Length: 588
Image 1 (cartoon, helix red, strand yellow):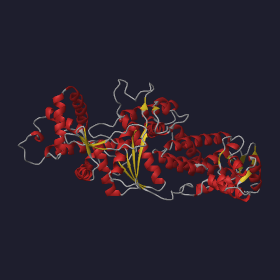
Image 2 (cartoon, one colour; image 1 turned 30 degrees about the vertical axis):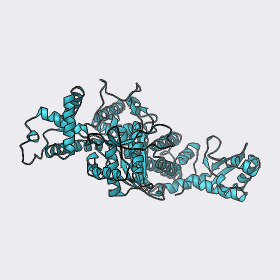
Image 3 (tube, one colour; image 1 turned 180 degrees about the vertical axis):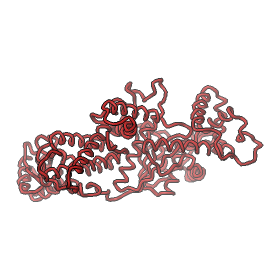
Image 4 (cartoon, helix red, strand yellow; image 1 turned 90 degrees about the vertical axis):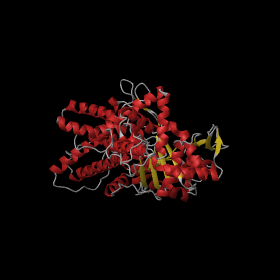
């Protein structure tokens, strides 16, 4: 279906043309004074100088052409030159009714779909997921769903950190703890064990201990660096240990991402790109892109138009070691070879922006990526506590993600038990569903690039701009529909009638914005647009609910129209929360 603004703009374009004015002036927008009109056009103001006429005169001519248009209830020219429009209620009801009959609720796929690789998640193996991983996972998952809904082919890659110094730290710490393991016996020539010599719990204890020790003990850190280098050079016992680390970690990571309802198509890591690095460096040298700087090999990426210093992209350190940038460039080669994507989109903390500027420029300059492949970095802000600092545990440590999920589920459970509308067992189950909505909506309702305060008390509230409020609205609609179909012989939805009061019209107007909102969220990669929309939609529904006796309406045709309207509202809300990555329970 065409967006309702596009339909109305077409009518204005015709009117502008008939009056002898450029149709480009005829853009229709939502009214900034909904108490006066539903839509407005300010084109007459822009036309005044071009056509040397008073804007009110131009607005009056255009308005006169629209008096008999069936899309409008009224069109008025208002000083100094605004064109104010109230939509025809018959047209509005017909438009929303057609949305309800469409499988996609009036949302058309984008005209030219793209193949997109999305890089989000970014977890490090051997470490538990913590709150710092939350935003990448939540935002990335939602953008994946939005882009797929809009027609893109999306390949989601978790891109694990599985090749850095943390591997060497774990190996040397394990050697100190269990020196008798066969991996540390230089005379051992047999097959290495299939089972890991540690559990995920033990592994997650080993790494922080080793990391802390490396900061105090220079010799220990040097041994870890040497072990990392040996691993990267293919030393068999360390490769065997590394595979164990991956195996144990990925099982745990998948479980935790599953709890967030976040799914990846690829479980690749930095290690998968390592085989591409030697040829890449050799090619850069042959083509003259690499030069030495303070012992390291770098690619200059600064440009004359830069307003701030952009340091060179370091490809190889003086000791031959490679860096994150090297791995990311090699990963681009791999992704180009495997998928030939039109766009590669990265979700990471906005403080990594300089890294991606360097990598993207180096990729373009060296020919790794052609100009027609879009490289895009979506930087997000920090999730902070009420003190304005990055979110921590009560004792100041970094909070594990599963701990955070548990806390918000508990907060929702306690609120549900205050009402005692469901059993304890059901409340526990429902609190996991509602808690996820609180967690995700609390994050996604903020503009991604901005920092925000994570407030469990506010996010878990059943009132206000929260996930539980949205779900409560859906559950309320489900309850009404269930009661209606239990007491009515009519099982089919009716035809939408013209709205009988303002709150019904407001609900229809908000529903009619859906395809515009989804398209904007897609084009801007902005999930918060959908959050703002469904919050307003929920408010509109609840206003309609309080003004209308839906189940008590005696006029059957009018009642069927009400049921059809709230059914469409439910479908729209359910589509949007599916895109945001959560679902509604049957009861709350």
